[in-house]
Image (cartoon, rainbow over the protein chains, first blue to last red):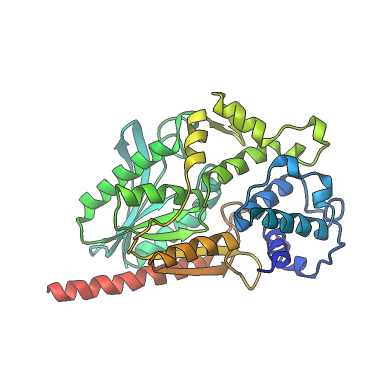
Length: 85
Length: 287
């Protein structure tokens, strides 16, 4: 399972990026970098990640740093998957 | 093919459900399809797409019943009083209505969109044993779905400093302690929350009717989500045959603008057609 690719797919679907996310580097800034990412989008991305991967994200687990960059978001998801195993 | 279209109110236990029925006008349908709609705002956003699909299914020989649950859409009652166990009763009345209309000749299908799939296991167990399943991006966990609804209420505070924010956990506790909550314009009762939270979707062990499972993704190439793939693998290992496919298309149940996915409708019709061919050959044997 290519977790990074799955995360990019979720971003693309929720933010209607039309494939743009496939070229995002790991250090690409999300919060304050991607104009599409408002607070409602954050809620929808969390929901889509939960559905796609089948885990539950507690609100206490996330803060501004989770959505800092592509790399930080992918690392967060990898951590969740590891914990679920 | 000429289509008959009726809008009517179906009497159920606690009021009347608004129903839309479409079927071939000049012949008996080979499949009787009950739509189990998405929950809350997703149902409203998906309305244009499901109406288009229902017309297309009817034009290909299926009878299709769309129903608004009590307290939802155009049915009687308030959202504050609605809850999933009530929807199961509504669905049971709808299935009975379809059987009176068609007898037992038509293959029964439950056409589930998103959270509608959470009702399917109980219906397969009691009201619709042997029904086939058409699944459109099914929600697998009611608890997760409830969490999503609550999270939208908190959207503005999710990434604030930890000290001054609420959490879905707090909202859930308030609900379960007996408080009504308004989420995105929908009043949610403790009863609604408790029942939704307890529901999960999985294909009952020993299910032998057709299962067709579609997911949509805006990006190409589309792939099934790991969560769906795991669920499907489990059911296959238990002996159920499943057609599964990820299609490229918009998430029409959540998009701000009205969206359609023609490929999803076409692939669904192809899935029905497999069954229709079977129905024709069964009839041929009888004749």
